[in-house]
Length: 247
Image (cartoon, rainbow, N blue to C red; front, side, top):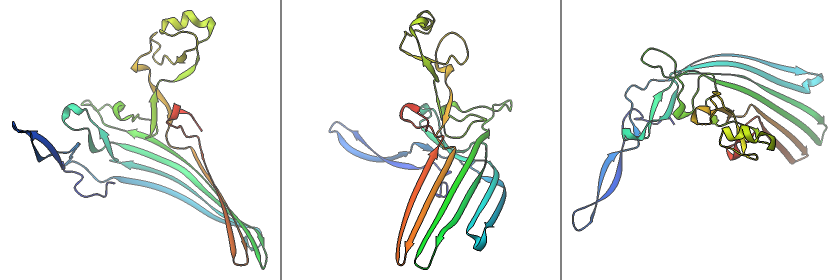
């Protein structure tokens, strides 16, 4: 929560320790695990938004809206990890530029409308594309990925960065599998840099933690003073942490 005050300061935390021959338990204040950053700046976002509201059929029995947006955020505020050898594990920083673009669709329909009974339906659908446009730069001004935080230029913010399984080694591939210290039945991992071995350099972005599509469907039935609502929500194109499976 970047609305919390004093985010630019290193905070102190209580720490107990034992000292002396009698193992006396004492207490003191030490710097916390988040290092302060006096150079923090406010985020700035430029957004272009286009929307349409529409009504169809007699008495506007069908209505809806479409919103299309494109935004670019500069000086994005995020918490990034740093090597623990610094004495801290994380720091709040302005990490770069991120683009978000997508659309939101909403449809409403009055299916049945009588004196005592009404049936209304609302459908929502949204799609968002997020992409890291820029991160930290080296001393020569070259754009760099941030592997420790799994941030990669051209990819979404929240991704899975791991070895990519392309299949299973078969019996007739035993000789090829042995080159990668594997046997038939083992998972076949992508040799991303094609150097004949599998190591940390072969990890790639395999999926996003954020869903591609969000959908919702609500049906509301009312009879006199009694109302019943049925709500359905759907999430599509999202990778899950358990076994990195896609839904």
